[in-house]
Length: 132
Image (cartoon, rainbow, N blue to C red; front, side, top):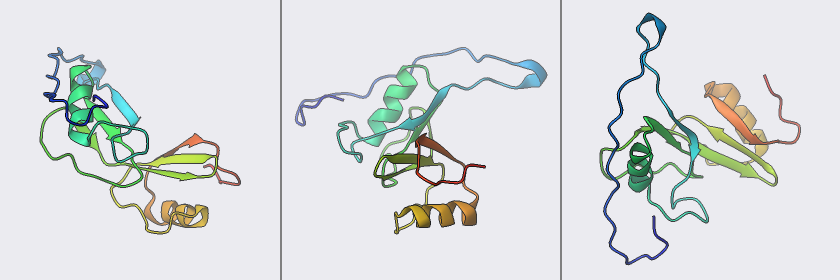
């Protein structure tokens, strides 16, 4: 999205893609597991625009991993995967669920992951983080 806050801009249109079929009847899906919206510092596009742009690029899904979980205000675009981004110093992780804890310490993150079994990925190394 444009960094000009009052510039009028319409949503990008989704590109038409033929499905790609795999063995045993599975269908391929393409997407991103670590997008960000204007709920993250330094980004200017709201969640609904990020999803529309992802669909315009031919993506089927997008995990918008902001520090807080924000729902896109309009339907359409790529399928949204619930996610949130955790950062602490140099460490960074993306957790794939829609319920971030209030306590954002590393100890709380470790307890949260152990208690919820939520899928996650380490974006930048987290000091002393056990990796299974």
